[in-house]
Length: 406
Ligand code: PMT
Figure 1 (cartoon, helix red, strand yellow):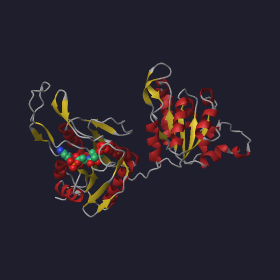
Figure 2 (cartoon, protein in one colour):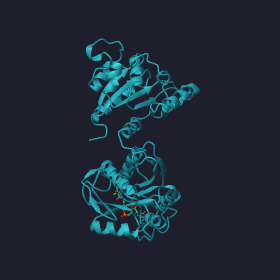
Figure 3 (cartoon, helix red, strand yellow):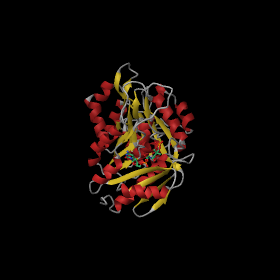
Figure 4 (spheres, rainbow, N blue to C red):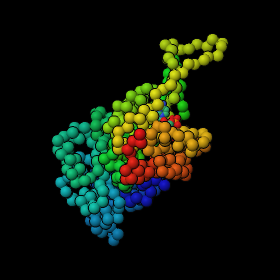
């Protein structure tokens, strides 16, 4: 089950070449079992036919304000009454202007005017049109009405220019939709999350690292953002798409991660360290590739700074500190020990031996251990696991946790 399953989306398509991308968005929504009803402006129909959208959504497409078919009379009122959210994508400069001025001159504009549900606007246009003061003022007006804006992306535009104005990626719009359906219980919280492995260079060609993919940390970042937090993600080398709306700091080594975390942590309300930081690094990185000699090779390793333990001994009152523990045995004992020794409020103990938990899989099975209780969670997706971790952190905050133990 995803957060969009069963959600009723009133999808407004307007006259931009990006209308063809909207067809793919409808497909993605339907794949997640959202219920999509499409309203097209006349201009949208010049780019993509209504048949495309009715085939993809499985529902009739609406475009005529004066349709006398019995189930479509008063469509401008009923469409939004029967929906959970209005999504206008692509939204042209013309449509944005009409919505900003409360026009009711076609079915989509009228349905938006009549809507008492969240409205999400996804602009797509040429850069000069987007940056024109008139469009900027119209967008500000929509924000004043409380509409949600999905910022357009940057890149090659259909007009041949390069710049801002591309319809945002679906993943970005999806995050906005998900946040609308999510309780904003982390709103105003500043959260620092670490993710992924670190790499400790051995020579110009080689490094020591581990199997962390970053999936758990990125899931924490996405879900915290959806719940309203301001999120900074410090990530080691991973191959994952950037989480929308999250400030991303990329690092490679444990020393770089330590520096980034120590720079950011003092201003954070919550720090969650899910990264798999290398405990050791080669004493020196060779200037040239280490050659085979016919003999074995001994490496001299030195300890990396324990970032979490350092945070635990310097934390400021009120800050919530959460660690992870990747364990293959004595999970509870090791979790309790690290909770105590690193001065944490909560530790997420990970079984790394199961086929579907821990490193580089989509699911996880963890136990949440805090100063009062140990709560085993079932096998869940990493996003669902992240949400359960935030639920527990929200409870701890409500109970006044977050003050240093020592
Ligand atoms: O990235 P994925 O593929 O999704 O996998 C997720 C995960 C298995 C990496 C993640 O769920 C997890 O368990 N992360 C913690 C891994 C780890 O390093 O555990 P640890 O028990 O060695 O370390 C305990 C805690 O100290 C961790 O919060 C770690 O970030 C922190 N630490 C460790 C060493 C160090 N030098 N500095 C640290 O801050």
